[in-house]
Image (cartoon, rainbow, N blue to C red; front, top):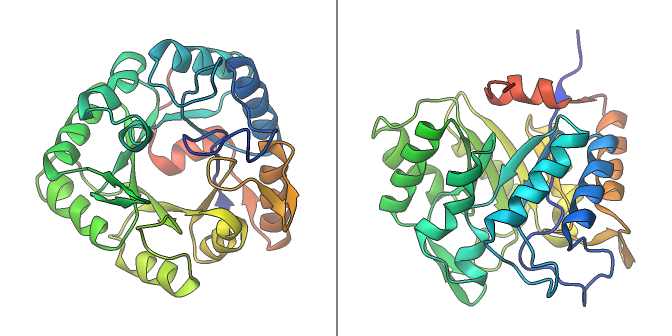
Amino acid sequence: MASRRVIITVAPTGSVTTRDQTPYLPITPDEVVADSIRAIDEGAAVVHLHARDPETGKPTNDVSIYREYIEGIKAKSDAIIQITTGGGAVTLGLSPEDRLAAVKELKPEMASLNAGSMNFGRKLFANTPDVIETYARLMKEWGVVPEFEIYDVGMIGNVMRWVVDAGIMELPLQFSLVLGVVGGIPATPKNLLHLVESLPQPCTWQVIGIGRHQIPLGICGVICGGNIRVGMEDNIYLEKGVLAKSNAELVAKAVRIIRELGFEIASPDEAREMLNIPKRS
């Protein structure tokens, strides 16, 4: 019997990690593209992007920077590109319309869709039912596959009520189970299993473990039938006290463990098939 294939997503920058925390964080378009390509070469099939101002390193919603990232990555790889619609809400205070601007303009293959409101650290991360419904409708119209970001178990119910039961989209859908954000569900194996058991079927899903939980909880998810996200958006350490010098190092570590467990790594085209993403010309 063929081994199950695991999708690895890399999130190279995020909107929270800073150069003060790690000098290896890619900031400029050239750095983000180069580091993403190295991560793809190591086995990442999906790249999750947040834009950074190349001068200040701070998060930005500049569509032209997203365009540089996408064109640079696509010129050298066939990886699936996924744009955030969430980072600007917490760090920049953007409106729902502004958060969706890059997706509307660039229409990547995938985009994140945050499935509920929460306290994100000390800030409010607002994702009301109206926003969830609107984002789902527009992504469907634009041919962009959403990845529903789940920070606590009630958000799974939000997706079912405001997206599936509302007739906007049908199962299977793609979910990200995010554990360890301050204000969200704590990062424990028990909580992960609770989230997994609460997911609708059929669906695909991945684990996003924050900080030191990235690899161990992500691998728990792989063992349970899911996929994994790694990268400096969520974690900057290769092991305790040792900074990762690139996102590619984090991908390579995940690949090694996954293969030692007897699984294979999904290519971008295999990931498209698993995630029901039509390949574009």
